[in-house]
Amino acid sequence: MIKGLIFDVDETLVYYEGYDGRHWFKNWGEEEIKKLGIEINFETYRKMVKGELPRSWVEKLGVNHVKFWKAIDKAKLKYRKWAAERGLIKAFPDIGTLKNFKQLGLKLAAVSNASQECTEFVLELFNIKDQFDVIFGKDYKYLDGAKPNPYLINKALKALNTLPKEALVVGDSLSDILAARKAGVQVVQVMRFGRIEGADYYVKDLNELLQLVLRINR
Image (cartoon, rainbow, N blue to C red; front, side, top):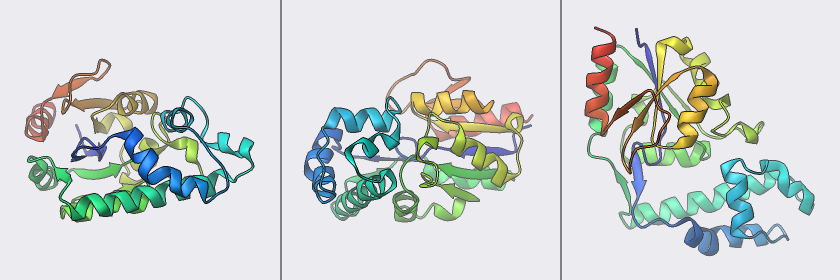
């Protein structure tokens, strides 16, 4: 019996038209990083984001890693506000299905590697924040707890008072799949941009996810 759904946000519920990581880093990220008196290239930044390097790696450059990631998230929020003003942040057309899960009595969590403020910003932008019982962005007390670490998934399970066997993680990326696996939770990949091996279930959109939950709970 599925009692809770733990959703990824970016590229699962919303997407950013024309977004390019390198372009963002050059035009938004580098400005905030230079204010800290250091320089980091995109590849090093990418490795920290992907977990190939610890997020505390920047301590080697003499800057507090929490301060560094707060600066990055400041740039991320600036970008999101800029993109929202230009209509570049889009919600997938099936997000209205979230209310159907609530009508079934399911508990919903939103979990993102983005900051709490960035995560809530996009959920509020499309008036879906209230669909979620709990929302967790990155935790500055444990920055290496970002997915694919299971920390945020476990945090959501505890907040929802739901056992791993009673939940599904719903996401689009390999990080979502790996985090769910490590937390002992079955995972559904929403194939927004193609299939990634390793998930327990595959759906093309949230309407198919609804049918999947109904079948499991039959």
